[in-house]
Image 1 (cartoon, rainbow, N blue to C red):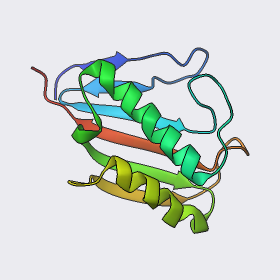
Image 2 (image 1 turned 90 degrees about the vertical axis):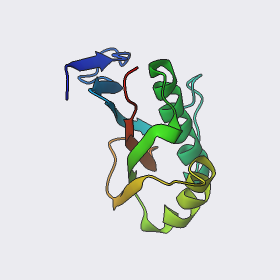
Image 3 (image 1 turned 90 degrees about the horizontal axis):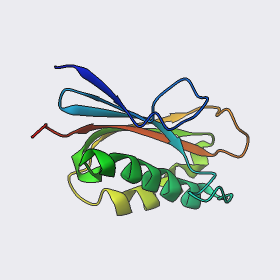
Length: 126
């Protein structure tokens, strides 16, 4: 698969990188959406889903990749009843050629978080 390349270790004080490139694959850590890029609080499943997906997009871009390269997504929700609303937003980001996906109902570490999303992208090196 090739040498691992750890990228975007921008999470100061946290024990992980936001993305790791291994061969032709990019593995993105789970991203949350309760804060936007200016640390302003985001409320509600639709708004947080959108922010999560924007965060993933923003993480992929410096690596020359995009959401079009995403092959697998995992969505963590705190409430099953949010699944439909999350899908409404999700479909806007993946309208065709949708990646494989798993959705899990679980607890999240911060009570303000209602969704967390991680993904794997396939982006062959030039």
